[in-house]
Length: 188
Image 1 (spheres, rainbow, N blue to C red):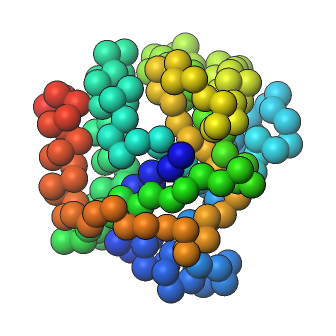
Image 2 (cartoon, rainbow, N blue to C red):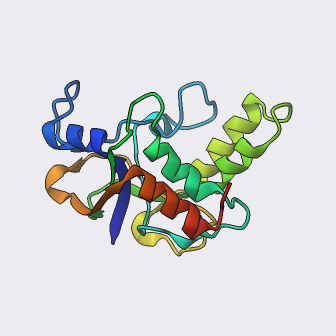
């Protein structure tokens, strides 16, 4: 079983050169699964994770009828060219083996996406917390995942050493974003 992670060339340089503040190389579990302001979760849910996929272009994400723009949004967040200046840079698809020793889980991301689509007046701290709790409760060990989630997301609660990372491809930001729109059929 392999995991797939999209990154940009700036972040990839940090992975290979070593993160200045962490003094580590590789793919780090830095972003949190949930922020501390989200209530009702066990302490482990506030730890950092690596967000990844079980396939390079998972059809459950690229052809999702409930969330037709989800794949371009995900890729767009990696391709962002606004505040960090990725104009003219590349997107890199990394893969890595998922080892039995990894804290690797699959969870249903659709719970969070549904919350994000609520009108602002209907979204509350409680609905936000509920969406994270449902995601947390949906977690299954990656090796036990049966392929039955609408938006299966791989979450890994440990770093992936640089030696385990394989560059599948490197492409210009524009090409990757255009491909995301093309495979999803979403052209807005």
